[in-house]
Image (cartoon, rainbow, N blue to C red; front, side):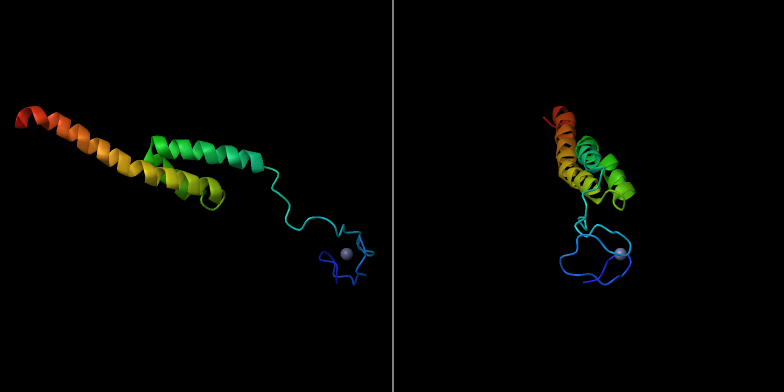
Length: 102
Ligand SMILES: [Zn+2]
């Protein structure tokens, strides 16, 4: 086993690197400090995507690299909302033309 920071050779029970002092028990993949903010964004993006599929799509494109989870939520909500918009549009259209048909 070698230190991941400086490459110094380590004993298997070492807790710290003898050369650079790196804490070997440090989690290699720590939870991001802004995890809560990301969760908030996820909800916000989801709601925005549901209110406006276009906003959801724009958010998805704008944030898919920086916040893939939130972007995905916005995209999914936009995709769910889109057919609802179309169906509602058709209903409104039918309601509009109905008096002229009958
Ligand atoms: Zn080291």
